[in-house]
Image (cartoon, rainbow, N blue to C red; front, side, top):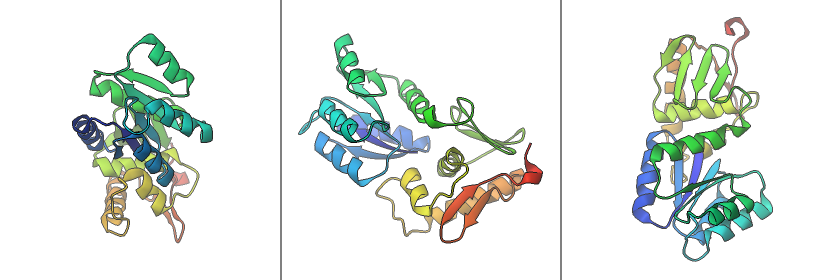
Length: 228
């Protein structure tokens, strides 16, 4: 999943983005309100983490402009504005959640998980496909009863395919949601991670779950003879 972190405190932005990347998220950073809107227009993000006290353009105005054109995009406000009135205003203007500073990183990540799960069609934290099961809270995959050990990037690819079960996902879309915008789409990194993920799933007993649609992309599907 690809996140946009909007935070003008550079050190805080670096620490939060580093922690999220270690968990497998792709993260872009914006350091003022104008840059936030520019990146939002240029890229396809799954969620925005938005500070309110921003230079150039206040975070509330960023929120209003995005909501004027997109009512479904998930936005989590992360702000030092901590009065009840601040929280009510943020939620009334259209944020999906509001977390005040100082905060615990684990709570931030849990709130991100909660917002990203809202369009999942399986149980709250479980993504299922045949013998495959992913727990988005634990960020762990299983084949049957056995855990499948994946790197953060392999996990990000698998999770995105499972969230989009039933449709073909292009390589460009996978890269957009699993890599930072600075990633080189022409490098071999994507093909390497797809190959490695397939190999691990095959070895775990989930053979041929990731199907290549030539010239179109990838889809995940459980072979009928292997579904539970």
